[in-house]
Length: 303
Image (cartoon, rainbow, N blue to C red; front, side, top):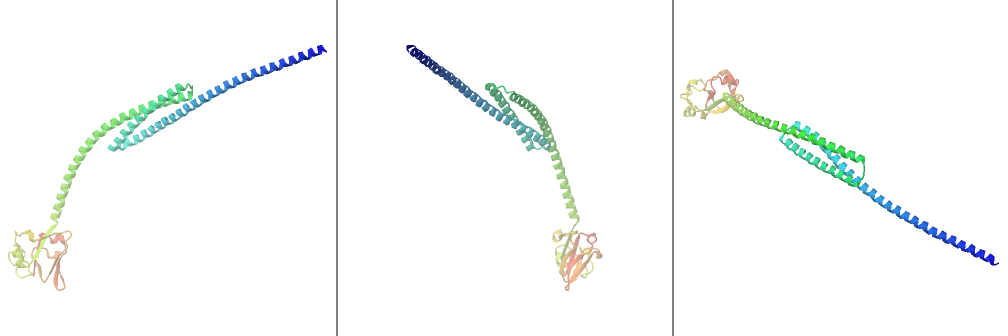
C-alpha cells in the first residue's frame, strides 16, 4: 500500500515537471517568434521608406527628363524656323532671329544645369540605374550637338548681317540714284506734258468791231461784215482778251448772236457757223487740225 502511494506521487511529480517544462518552452518559443516579427516589421518599414524615396527620385527625374527633352524639341523647331526666316530677310526678321538665338542659348544653359542636378540626385540616391545614366549621357551629347549647331548658326547669321549691311548701303545708293532718275523723268514728262498741252492750246475771242478795236485786236473794219478781213488783226494784241481751249477736245465755240464772221484766217472747209432759231448758235469746228493750222488765235466779230 505504501509502495503504491510512492509510485503515484512520483508519477504526479514527473507529470508536473513535464507540464512546467512545456510551459517554459512555449514561452521561450513565443518570445523568439515575437522578436522575429518585430525585426521583420522594422525591415519592412525601412524597405517601404527606401521604395518611397526611390519612387520620389524616379518621378523627379522623369519630370526633369521630360522638361529637358521638351526644350530640345523646341530648340530644334526654332532652328528650322530660323532657316526659313533667313531666306526671307528684312530688319524685323533679323531682330527676331537674334532674340530666338538668345532664347535657345538660355534654354541650353538651363538644360545643362538640370542634367548636373540629375546626376547629383542619382548619386545621392544610391541607386544604380543604368537606363538613367544612359539617358543622361544621351542628353549631354544632344546638348553639345545643339551648342555646336547654334554656334555655327550664329556665325552664319553674323556673316549674313555683314552682307545685309553692305547690301543695305548698296540699296540706299541705288534708291538715291533711282529717285534722282525718277525726278529727272518726272520733270521731263512734265515738260513734255506742258509742251504738248501748249501745242494743243488755242485761243478765241469774240465781240463787236468796236469792242475788238478797243481791245487792240482789230485795227480797221474789214469792209462789210461777213466779208473776209484777216489783215485787220493787229500783230501785237494782248492775249488776256482771249479764252484758252484744248484743240483736242473743243469742237464748238458758243456764239448765240444775230450775225458773226471769222476775222482770223482759217480754211473755210474746216468750220461752219450753225444757225438755230434765227440766230448763229455756235461755230462748229469740222476739222480741228486744219482749222488751227494757220493760226492758233480765232477772232470772231459779232453783231
